[in-house]
Length: 390
Image (cartoon, rainbow, N blue to C red; front, side, top):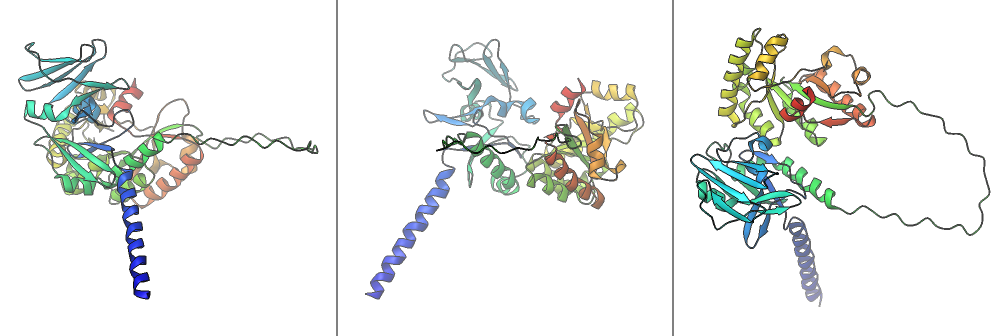
């Protein structure tokens, strides 16, 4: 009898464990994550890939170098006026006509494939496109957070398993952020009706409170490379944030592993150009861009050139670079409160910190102060900095 009870109990435990496993794996069922080469893409309810009639569709932005800052050699451009998406690469091209629900090649020959639209976002049949162009590939990888759709070309550094391991933290963040975004708002129960009129009590007049320094300011952060750069990255990622990391060209090769890790985690990587003339800085930018391309297949858009005057900076902008020009440098302030008092509420505050022990202490305190002041912290991307520069 006791042996029978033990068998029944073991069976019940097995059923419970199996049920929990099914629940855990089922939570991510039907969810698609995205990555282009060695960089994850943000997944939202609007742009998450989908399967229609057994065909996998991805948002056209996966093939847009403007959206991903990665040149795959096959690019997609959406014309919202004509409602067409042009996908081109090499000597080939396909036009998807969203209004007519048709497609044709660049010579006008009709094709038996079409795009779909969801929430005003065009989606493209990625497997068909990979086969048509031949220079890019798409793989599907099962993860703990859903199926990863990864589009790559020959410049990819990490294989699928290595990439999932390196980018696990950001894939998890994307997954949980997506779940939070689709949760319906909690409904509040109606207030209970009093059974009798409450006794009036004198209430104190609320006193106005002084807002904390830097309240509601908008901030973008950059970290100048130092020995504790990885600790700075972890500090940011634990707060679900990303920032700009700046390296001089001669700092790139010795930190190739760190650079690949920063790129996979979704941080922006930029160059510090020590040259004193526009010509020197342009040469240094070219050298750094070649190194970043070799290390992580990362294109350089953001540079800092502290020694250049206005004309030199303008020349770099003409060459296609976006300048990081910090308004505040953490090393110039004694405390996080001093930095907060220096923030402006009328413009985007560009704040540069150092990756050393004092810089990390300041960074930790600054995060707490910015959270208390309800600051809007933005990732310093090339597009954000270009818009802020006007």
